[in-house]
Length: 212
Image (cartoon, rainbow, N blue to C red):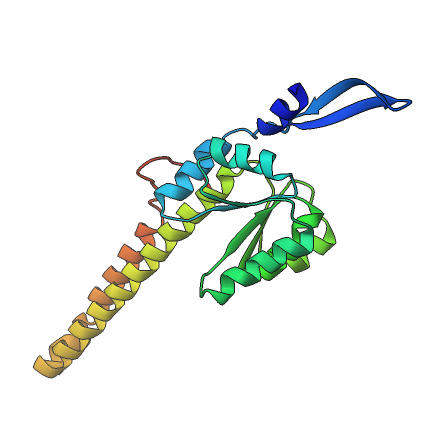
């Protein structure tokens, strides 16, 4: 009864038996890593849906998903099963990013649109399977990486906007006064380039800050 209760709570019971009699039960627990909940909260804040893929049994997967506030989970998956689950997401037109920290996650990372390997121990086979390698052990690093990439994309879009406005003023200036504009054409171009360059130096997040 106690073994069944521990299994319902997410533990993995191991029975110690001798000559067909059970002499004890050990329960293995896999505690959540540091800042894991904060990392998933950050992803949810960015409106990124998360799905838990695990080789653990259904009870363990259900408990972990509940603790992490994850609505969807897949349990008792082999490495090839995880890759098939990624392919199934693609059939629904979804873009996927998979995060793994072990060699048995490599098929899943290879199948995903963006495979993120999260581990300090980097082997040669990881380089060919993963698109992004983060030498760390905290899932929070993934959320910060996505935040930083979104920040850079906003700056790139803003730079394109500055370039478009600059081209517009150049064309207008040429039509109005070609001789005068020939002397002052460099000023708006230099200002746009300077503004775009300075914007990349301002790496400030509204909820957290980090040096990259």
